[in-house]
Amino acid sequence: MADKKWQEIGYPARLEERLPDDVVRCHLSPRNCKIRPGQHGFCMVRANRDGRLVSLNYGRSVHATEETIETEAVFHYEPGARILSMGNIGCMLNCDYCHNWKTSQAKYVEDKDVFYYSPQEVIDIAKRHDIKVISWTYNDPVVWHEFVVETAALAKEAGIVNLYKSAFFISPEAIEELIPVIDIFSVSIKSIDPKYYRKITKGWLEPVLDGTEQVYRAGKHVEVSTLMVTDLSDDEKTAYDVGKFVLDRLGPEVPTHYVRFHPDYKMTDSIRTPVERLEAARRVGLDMGLRHVYLGNVYDTESTNTRCHNCQELQITRYGLNARLLGVNEEGACTNCGADANIRRIPGGSTFPPTVNELPPGGDFDVADFDWYGDVRALHVQVRNDSAETKQVYYRRNRSSTSGTPWSVLRLQPQESYRFIAAKSELDELGVAVAVPQGCTSSLHQVFDRAHFPTTEADNGSLNADITPLPLFDSRR
Image (cartoon, rainbow, N blue to C red; front, side):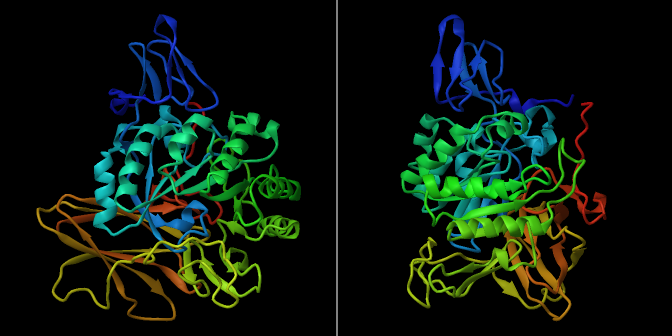
């Protein structure tokens, strides 16, 4: 077993109940874990140290990563916005198909994969790169409660939006602490079948539904997604049950996403969800009266675009994780008929890095190219400035029909490490290129569908179009 230095220092935890004999009860999740001295809760990152409840993952994170808001199954809040994704260690569930198993299950976490951030450092990264949304995501932000609440409060003071992407197995008390600081809740509802929840996720259903309704009634922006697992939950009944929950307990305007599954963790003996089943699920949702129903983890389909629910005008086109606004004004209304598009905007809109047509003349750049293949159409690019001066890194899209595609410019402070996603944005796009100057290094990490951890460096990935290009789970560990 690898060293676990990341869990040596505990941070005072919220939602603690002190019991006799130095026992504590954690009221963060519906489990209400009763923890004896020296023991951990189910999540393995909340523990009893000397009779007090502590968090072992405060400030412990995977690499902060710039992505787009669409990676979080959020289509109706500043579409196309750049976000700073922050993920941590541990989880209050243990889903058999988890795409983030190497960080969600704390026993598999290795010190080399852990990065350390203070709340102010997270805010500084977002401000330095002019990112207006911080996303609490990946494994699940519930078990990072103290760090999320404290950092999100700082973000809010700085005018930064907070997005909470979660399976939402969380207590009502914890939700009340989130409501003042979180703007967007993207909730992953695995199924509406209680038996499914118990067997596949190791949690239970009703707290998830109650919590989703709680944030919706509080006036927060809510979007709902469901992973349609091949031959398990990719049928029309699942689509109907999810849609019924949205209609009965939320509202028809709540965007609902039916998401394509890829085999992972303990469920590798399967195939990706057939797209025709996803299209059928979407039709079920629309026929029920849901206004905005989307497919996730798919390309080359109209089912990711947004049309006005009133006049059917095309408002937003999407390709993969990229969005283009066509018919929505700054107030989130249809530019054709004026109907509310149920889209919230950030004042001033999102910002994007500057571009140049050519690399600076005379520069000594190391250029790396990656070509899209099969269903691998996204990449995490990690770059580091090892020098003592500010450097500029460049990256661009390689397309078949154009030449001289502009280079985006990324400024790195001395010793700064930065990670960002590049996802296929056009049908004719072949891949991406990254140019780093002397004193900087880069590595490319394949991402299958939406952003996740772990990732695999490009040179080590599979070239099979339907096989996850990720580390495989070994049940003998």
